[in-house]
Structures are given as structure tokens and as C-alpha cells.
Image 1 (cartoon, helix red, strand yellow):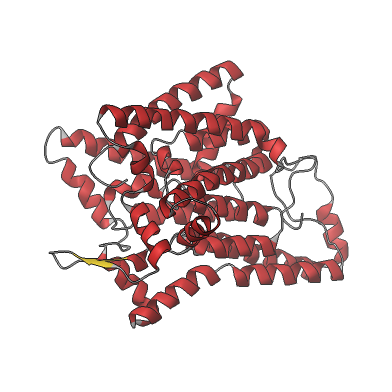
Image 2 (cartoon, helix red, strand yellow; image 1 turned 135 degrees about the vertical axis):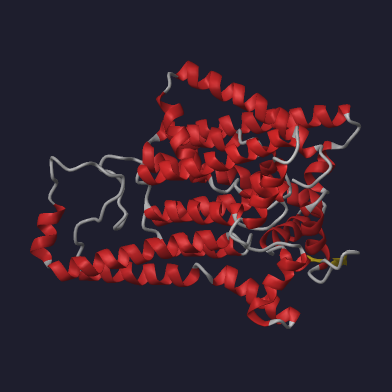
Length: 418
């Protein structure tokens, strides 16, 4: 622990045995989702495993793993879909899996996504347990598992891999492991464009830590000892500056913090600059690649117009009302996170992920999937669920899990990409 020490007396259960209840619950929910998908797909004469491993983005990742970058599709309307839009970490893992096992590239992608989903569940448990206790940690994992689009966690997509890296980077930040946090942020930046959210979280925490250390040096040792003394009337908070630790340890901590902050953006920056060099368009070349997919950041204008058009007829107005309610719920959850005084890096991460998901002009059917990594939004719900009696909490979770499994099967058997 460093200057983001946990609440006194709190013992975190980041070990695998400690996280076992959460992971077993996660496995049960995901098994139910896969069972529903296979039954539903069989009834529609479709191959469920193909839906999970060899359609939409999965095909792009597998092709990159097998042939490298350089493939693009030119559409009749002039759009250019280039594989440079896809970040490289998942294809690298697929290539590694294919090289060292009998698996195909698609199979290796499915295996990587599945293993990463459990790593993500473990990381979510670790963060929630550190903040609010074991019961809330288990509930947070189960809520992440029963998301309406939770089936994407079992696909050869990069959401699970990114969420795992992001969750463990946040945990490393919260426990003062700056080099680990920066390294994981670097890897997250090689996974998805939203890796910027992890970088922002590490930099926000590092800057806040540096400002606290500077203030501590300015007020002097005696004042630090007085400020470190417990105040019986003060409100307890999950994280607070720790007492002074002496010049040697403070210097070592500052060095690790600086290194972690330096490492954090290298993944995103490195890939974006490489794409710019490859396309000959310079540092903004990646934005041109995304524009070919009609992806960009417009502050939510295109999405708002899309939702507004739903209200021009019936029954599409029902879909518009549902979308409006969904966006309102996401914003409301973030406001509650702020009011609950979640740690700064957690709030920054959730805020950036949510903003990029809602305010991008990307394919609108994918917006629920883009919010899958925003797991801190589930923490208020996890706290509420954790306060319920065990039997009632289990019944609520089971009911939502069934609904999620059925919706996931319906969603993945649809005509468009998730």
C-alpha cells in the first residue's frame, strides 16, 4: 500500500481461493448463457459456435492473426473498412495460441476471450472487494455476468481481454503498485481504442498522488503527524493519504509512480503512431481509418438523432423510449458513483469509457457492447444487492441471469453484428 491505502482492518481477497465464490457464480451464469445460445441457435438451424468465433469482428481478428495487417474492403458507397481499425493484442494472442496448441486461430480467439473473461471477473471482484467488501465483490461480478449483452464475454472479441487488463490496472493503482498499473494500462492500450480510459485513470491517480506528496512536504513533518492522527468525528472514507514514510521510501514511491505514468500511454500511442506511419497520414492516420468505418467522436449528436428518429412512428417509438431510459440509467449510475465517493481513478475510468461509448458516431447496435468494460457503474447496484438477504439476493440474480441468457441468445442470432 502507498498513499492510496485501504480502510484500516480491510483484508483484500485478491488470491484465487478468496475469489472462488465470485468465479464459480460467474461460471454458472456464463454456462447458462451458452446453453441458451446453443438451444436457441439449434432451433433456428444456426451454429452457435460459429456465432461465437467466426462472425463479425471475430473474423477480422482471426484474419489479422493469420495474415497480419493490410486487408481492407471497399464498399459501393465509398467507405473503406480496414483491418487497421483493430488493435493488435488479441490477434497476437490468437497467433500464439495457434502456434503452441492444435487450435485454429478462431479457436484460439475463443479460448483467449474465455480465459480473459474469468480474469476480468477476478479483477472486478478484487476492486469491489477492496472498496466495499467481499459480498459486494461477489455481487459486482454476478451483475457483470448478467448484463443483457453479457454473451459477448464468451466471444472471440476483445471486450473481456480489455476489461481484465483495465480492472487489474485499477486494482494496482488503488494499492499503489504503479509499475504494474502502468504496464497493464500499456497492454489495455494495445487492445482497444478505449484504452485511453485506463491511461487517464493512471494519470489522474498519479497526479493526485504527486500533489498530495508535494503538499505533505510543504506542511512539514509535525503537521503531517497531526494530520495523520485519527479524528473520531471524521467520516470514514475508503482511501486517504497515508502518513509520512521518510525520504528514502517516498523517493522510491515517486520513482515508481513516474515510471508507471510513463508506461501507461505507450500502448495506445505506439499503435496509433504505427498506423499513421503505415498509412502515410501521420499521427492522425488512425482517425482516418476509423472514419472509413464511419466511427468518430461527435459528442453524441449522431446517436441522439438516431434515437430521436425512433419517435417518428409506432412501434419504433417504444424502442426510442427504451434507448432513452437506458441512457438515463447509465448516467444516473455514474452520478451515484460520484456521490458514493468512489476513488478518483475509478471515476475517471468509468467516465471516459461511458463518454466514448455514448458520444461516438459508431454503429449504434454496438453501444451496449461498448459499455461492457464500464464495470464501476455496477458498484452501486452491487452494494444494493449485497444488502439484501441471501435468499432474496440469489432469487433476484437467478431471475436476471435467465433473462440475460435468453436475450443474449436472441441478440446474437440477429442479423446485425453485436
